[in-house]
Every structure is written in C-alpha cells, then in structure tokens.
Image (cartoon, rainbow, N blue to C red; front, side, top):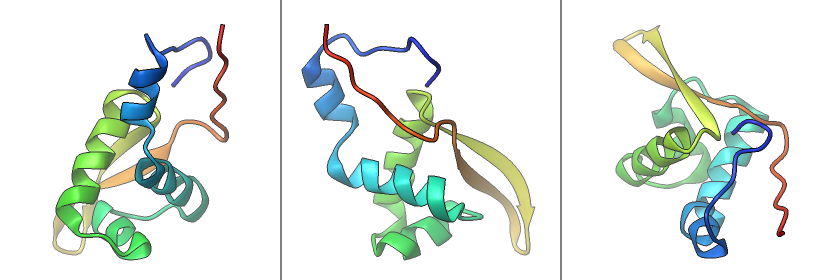
Length: 90
C-alpha cells in the first residue's frame, strides 16, 4: 500500500489483515521467500490457503508478486511493498 491508502471501515481492516495474513506479510518482508511454495513451508501451512492469502495481500497492495523462472518453470515471488504497516483511526 502506498502512503494514504485506506480501508473504508475497521471491519474491512479486520477482514483483510487477519493474524495469519499479517504473519505471511512479516515472513515475506523478513525472509524474502523465492516462491509461494517456500512461503507455505516457512509458515507450516498448505499451499492453497497461503496462495489465496497472498493473492488477497497483493490485490490490496501490501505485497507484489514477481514472475520469475524457477527450476521447474515459472513461479511467483512475493515481495513486501512496505517495511511497516500503520493503522490510523480518524
């Protein structure tokens, strides 16, 4: 997310930034996994649920997915777009 991006309500924040998704973002930011598959292993979750969460985080602009070439074909490399997330209530 860029400076000034916002959610419409606190419920929208709760629906997007769940504890598991925040954990994914922190692991992406700190460990820089080369693929979603590696990310799933790092957080000990199944690929499908991690993939869905990563797609959502990318859709709201917290991370980006870079297409790269892996040993077995193309892969998506998740990258954090922010070092910190800050919530302000007005």
